Amino acid sequence: MRPSRTFRHGGIRIEDAGGWGRDEPAKNAFLPNGAVILLKQHAGRQARCVVRRGEYVREGMVIGRADGPFSANVHSSVPGIVRDIRIADLPEGGRSEAVVIAMEGSFDRLGRRDERYLWKSMGRNEILTTLRDRGVVDTELPGMPLFDLLSDRKDLALLVINAVESEPYLGAEDRILRDRAPEIAEGVSILRKILEPKRIAIAASGPCPESLPLSGEGGELEYVQLEPKYPQDMPSQLLEALGGAVKRGSPEAVFLRASTAFAVYEAIVLAKPMVERYISMGGGALKRPSVLKARIGTRIGDLIEECGGFLGPPTRLVLGGAIRGHSVHDLDEPITKTSSAVIALDPEEVGSLRRSPCIRCGRCAEVCPERLDPDLLYRLVERGLRSRALGLGLGSCTSCGACGYVCPSRLPLVSAFSSTEAPLPGSAGAAAGRLS
Ligand code: SF4
Ligand code: SF4
Image 1 (cartoon, rainbow, N blue to C red):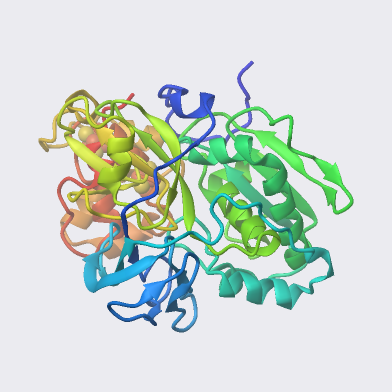
Image 2 (tube, rainbow, N blue to C red):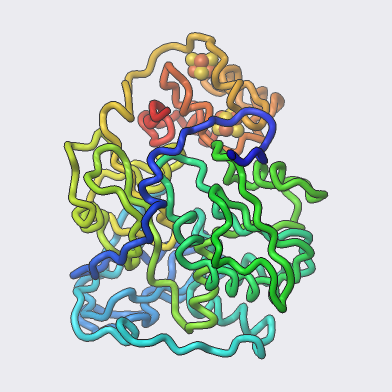
C-alpha cells in the first residue's frame, strides 16, 4: 500500500525512477589515485589552507582550518603527497582553493577494526566542539556546520531526520538509512543530547528498516513514511506532512539529513572526520546505476568509470538531483561533503532544450507547492517589475524548481526568481524537465 502522508497543494508525482539504487547495499568505491579536496565545502568562508606543496598528509589530517562562523575544518580523505594547491570552480558557482593529493603511503583506519568511544559521559559543549573539530556539516547544501547550526538551539519542539528521496534517480539517503540504521539511531541519540527535542521524526520514502531501533534508553523515535512526491524533502513540505504545531520557518524545528546523523555517529563514536560520502549514481546514460560510498575529493569521472561508464554520450551531467542540481562540465570535478548524486541524463530524459514563448497552460501554477502563479511572476520579473512580483508572493518561492520542471516551453522560471540578474539558460532544473 502506498503511504498517503504528504503536503496538500501542488507537487509532482514522480514515479520511482528505477528502485535500482535502493535494492542493493551501497558499494565501496575504489580508492582514488588522487584526491582534489575543495577547501570550501560548507556555508561560510573557505577554510584556511594549512599544508604546503610536497608535504605528506595522513588520512584524516586537517588540511584546511575553519575561518570564521559557518566555515568548517577540511580533512584529507586519503594519505599522500600534496602535489598542488590551486583554484577550482565550485559546482554550485563561485571558486575555492583546492588541495590536490597524490595517494601514497598507508591508511591509518582502512581495514582496521574501529575503536568505539564512550560518548555518553561527554557534555553538550564537548560534543559540539568535537563535531567542529571533525568538520561535520549538514550534507544538504549549503553545508551548514553543525557547531554553528546547533550551538544556540536547545529544548526544540521538533528534530526531523530527513531521509526522503523526492527527485528521480536519488537513493543515497534511503540507502544509508537502510544500510546503517543502528548507527544513524546512535547519531540521533547524540543529537538528542545536544538539542533535547520534544519530538524526533525520521521522515523517509521507504518502509521502516527492521534494524532501526525506535525506542531505547534515550527516548522514542517516530518513523514516518511519506508519499514519493516532489518536493517532499523540503522543510515546509515536511512540516506540513508530519503535522503538529510547529509552523514553517520556526526556530523550534531543525532538519538534518540521515547522512548527517551518520556523520555525527562517525565523528563522536568512531572519532572519524568527514571524509566519505554516500552518493547516488544514476540517469539513463549511465551503464550501471548504483549507490557508492566514496572518498571526498574523488573525481566524478572515476565514479562514472566505476559504474561501467556511459551507454552513450550524456546530454547533461548533473551534480545533485535532476531538478535542483547543478550542471557539471568537467569530469575532473570532485565530490564534496554536500554532493548527493551524479546524474547522467540521456537525450530522451532531457528533451528539447529550446525555449519557446509561454503557452499559458497553467501547469506551473498547478504544481507550485507555495500556491504561487509562476507564469505571472516570470512575466513581471522579465519586465524588471520585481517589486510587484514580491507583492504577489515571490518572496515565498523556495526555488524548488517544480514549475521549471513541468514547463513545456522550457522557460528558466527558477533562475529568474532566484536571481536579480538575467536568467541563465540551461540551468539543471530548467533543462531536466522531461523525466516523467
Ligand atoms: S520554484 Fe518557486 S514558483 Fe516555482 S514551483 Fe517552486 S515555489 Fe513555486
Ligand atoms: S508551465 Fe510554462 S508554458 Fe505553461 S503557463 Fe507556466 S510558464 Fe507558461
